[in-house]
Length: 248
Image (cartoon, rainbow, N blue to C red):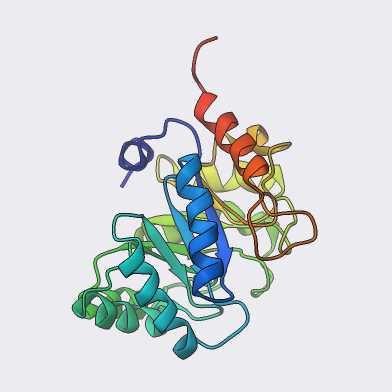
C-alpha cells in the first residue's frame, strides 16, 4: 500500500486522525467512540492499558457488536504480532473482525543482517487467517533504544513487513522529533507512516507533509484525564487535518 492508497481508503487527503481509547470498561469505550464517530474521525483504536488481554476480549466483542460499521483497530499492550495475530484470527472466525492491529514492537532489528523475528511474525499473520492492517512499531517508545543515525535504515528494512510503519516520541505524550520523521520518510519512500505520541492541534501541521496517520490520545483527551476524549480538542485536530492541502 502506498500513501495515496492509504488516504483513499480513509477518504482523507491530510493526515488520518485515529483516536486511541485507553479502555476501562464497555460504557466508557462506547461513550468515547460516540464522540469520535459524531465528529467524523475515520478510525478508532482500543488499547488495554490497565488489564490483561483475556479481560479485554469480551469488551472487544461487545464493542464490535455495538459498532459494526466503525473502523476499529486494537493494541494488545506490549504484545507483538506473533501473539496478537492468532487471537485476531480467532476473533474474526467467530464474527468479531477488527480492522487493524498496532504493535508497539514490530521486532525490527537494524543490527542484524536478516529480520528473523519479523519474518516469523509475517508467517504467523498469514497463517492466522486475519486480514486486517498491520501498524508496526519501529524505533518506538519504551522499546530497545535505536541510534538516531539508524532511523532511516530502520524504516527502510521495516517497510516490507507491515502495512504502516509506526513510530513515536520518547514517551507517551512526547512529540516526535521532526528530524526523526524526515529520516523515516526518506527510508519509507512512498509507503505510509504513522506516529503515535505527542500530536496535538498545536503541532499537527509540523508533521502533515510526511506523516499519513496520527494515533492520538493525550493530545485530544481532557486535561489530566488519561481515558476520555475532549470533543473540542478532537474537533480542532480533525479540522486542521481536513483542511491540509486544500486551497484557500
